[in-house]
Length: 187
Length: 187
DNA sequence: GATTGTTTTTGACAAAAGTCAAAATTTAAT
DNA sequence: ATTAAATTTTGACTTTTGTCAAAAACAATC
Image (tube, rainbow over all chains, first blue to last red; front, side):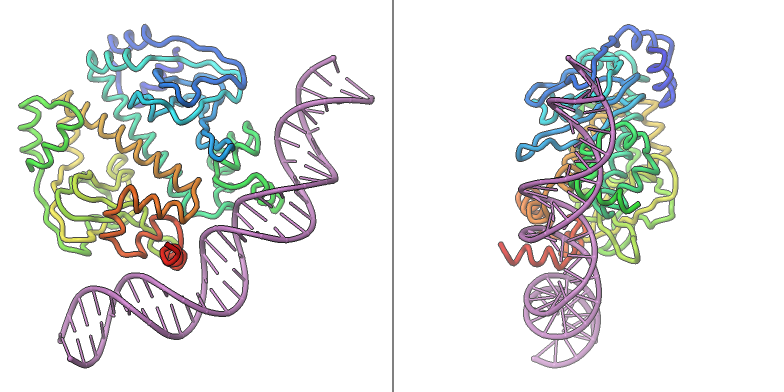
């Protein structure tokens, strides 16, 4: 929990009262490898902070699993679409390692937004970071070749290829596993 | 200006004072077709609301222009990365039509955030919408074929192919202009 | 340490998309 | 209306990536 508070204070300052309120509102969740935090069709009612571990977001297309993002230490994770709209999720969240998370419900968070301007600010700032991150991924995915994307992944996020099976990485990069394997053999 | 206020009230309620403050802080900008709102290397100090017209964001790669997004009526537009970080922009913003915009500076907006919790909330909610929109684009771009992407564009955003030259659309979809032309001839 | 299951690699071929160059069409300007 | 400029289409060919099937490598378990 200290890790969570430490992390979010990097986004924006927090009053003592707001910090205490956050402290009171997050609950610890411990899950084993391969368990699901969310399955498609369910409404995602929680936002999670990942203290330790790793997970992936994936959905099913033509019977295949498509992994479209990963979460690691100090990431906030949720099915963003389902969490914000409270509509059924189209994606699944599955643990890739045994993990420690901290959870807060949508309702509780909404209440915190009402009570504390600084918490709303903090989330606003966090959204900016996550938006920029997604924008970069988008541009890279669309306008670079498969080999360039993999090389960039090795340089900028080496923890991903180190901790995640190749098949997941291939779909994360939008290529087939065979193509990724061939790219690697050429390096 | 009424259009802008009307639009943002769709995100979250606004106190009369906050509404007045917004009214006072936005300035009208009128620009002709092909003019630039921002060129790469410059720091983007303003956020714009597009009341009427159209524009594109593009950057240069290997001497080619890559259009990665479009803005139309009721969109907020800026170089998001440069605006939030105040680092030099990597992208250019160019008008595709003669346009009417409303501009607010980063400093003024920051001040409004400090004065009005409800304006910060409104932007937080707006970010959620823009994030979801980008996430959908991302998933579509990476996991669908070129033809599927074009068909989806026709269905979900027909104003884009109607108002924008083919070359821009091709790079927006991440394909060559020739391929897009061939896709269209097959329909 | 043999066995089972999972993950990764390799091969042969097919499909999709890119490139370069030129022609056709559309749009804008005089 | 005519000319010039820009945009879109077409053709021939190359490169990239995907698919299916099988083999190899690696891990986990008993």
